[in-house]
Image 1 (cartoon, rainbow, N blue to C red):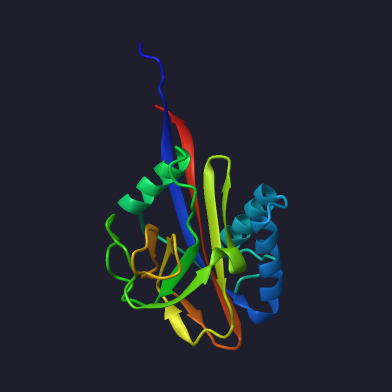
Image 2 (cartoon, rainbow, N blue to C red):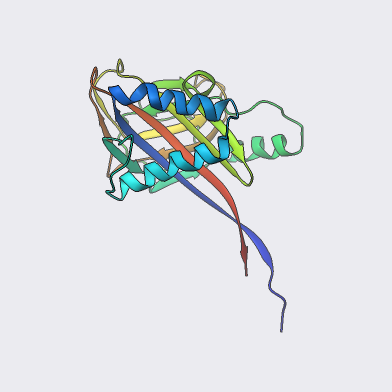
Length: 202
């Protein structure tokens, strides 16, 4: 009888979440604490538990107006290569920016993707979110304010710089069947995700 083999499985989940503008100061403060390493594991776990609970139609505080979970996502070849360089110490820079788009939301993400369809906005994790590694997981979130023009957002991504030209994309995410509706002046929204390396016995 063969011994069981321990393997690592990649598991990732990505979100778009809409917030009432009155909740945005709390969300920004929460993200700042994670970004600054203040109980980042505990606060990060709480943040993503809140998103999952609201998606499953449970009452939460603060309560997102809408949460979409990505069913079509991909890690890119260049993004994986950059993570490997980070792990081996060949690269000390990280992924710094999140972008969102209206797109068609119907294209299938590919591992060579370097941009979104019809990108509308981007956010810097260092000032309006976080990109945090905790144990065997990477967690990110970028929050866009109430001044963003009205639209239905269907795509998001994470990359190493603000601009698309010459960037390395970590992941591209599509919310074709459940985009979030953003209302200028009334709401803000977050693009967030967890990428985990989960040990499994085969």
